[in-house]
Length: 336
Image (cartoon, rainbow, N blue to C red; front, side, top):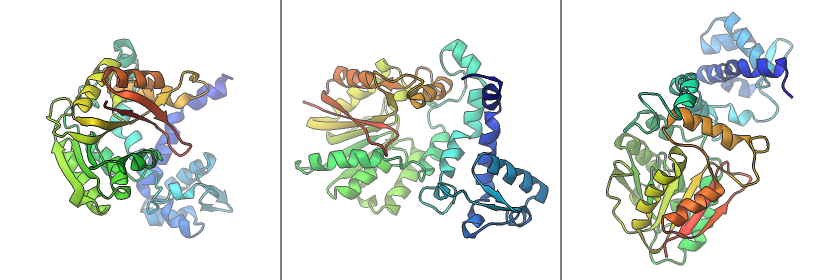
C-alpha cells in the first residue's frame, strides 16, 4: 500500500544508509560485543562528542541495529556477527562499496540516466583501471554469499574426470570463486585476468588462502587482452550484467575460443526467472537501477537471456543452478 508514511520512508531512506555507514566507520558495534555501554562510554571509545553518539545510537536502535535499555546500548539479539569488524561475516565491506561516495554520486544523476538510457558519469563502472574495482577486490569479507561454494560443489565432480584442471578467471577481482574451487581441487591452476592494480590485491588473497603457487596474473582488458590457453574451465562471475546481450555474447565467444574442446564455462550473476515480477522478486530489478547509472547498457538479465547468450556463443547444454545460500545464480555450459 502506498501512503504518505510509505513515501516519507522512501524519501528519507538515505538517512538509514548514512546511519549504517557512520556506525561502521566509527566501529561502534565492536565494543558492544562484550556487553552494553552508555553513549558516554561509546563516545569515549570512538573519540566523538557524547551528544552526537547518543543521537546516533538512538537512531540505530530505532531501525533495529541496536537495543536501547536503561541508558545503555546493546547489540541486536540476532545478526550481530554482521556488525562486528573482526567477524568473518562482517558487512562493512558491502557498505563501503554500496554506500561509497561514487555510488551515491551516480544515483544523484538517476534522472539523467533515465533520460539518456544509461550512465552520464564521466567515470563509470567500465572506465579502464577505475580504482573502484581495487576497493571492490579488497572488500571480500562480505562477498561470501554462497555462490562461490555452489560453483565449487558443482564443478569438483566434473573436474575429477579430467586429465588437467587449468582455469581462466575473467575479471577475477577478489579471486574468491577461483580460489574456493582451487582449495577443493588441488590440481587446479588459476589464471586471473583483471586490471593490474586489482590483480595485486587478488595475489595477496591467493597468498592468504594458500594457493599462490597455483595462481598466475594476466593483466589487461577482458575484451582485448589475449587470453592464452586453451583452458579446461573459464569462470565469468558477476560480469555480464554490465553489458547488453550482444556485447555480453561477444565476451562469451572469447571465452569459448579460449576453452579446450569438452571444456566448461561457469557464469555467475544476478538474474530473474520467467515467472518473477518486481513485486515477487524485487532484488534483480532494483539491481538494474545500479547498472543504469553505472554502465551504458547493463542490466539484470533473465535466466532465458543467459541461456540464449551461452547458446549464441557456441556453448552446449546450458544449465542454471541456485541455492538458498547464494544471492546469485550459477550457469554452466560446455564447449562441444
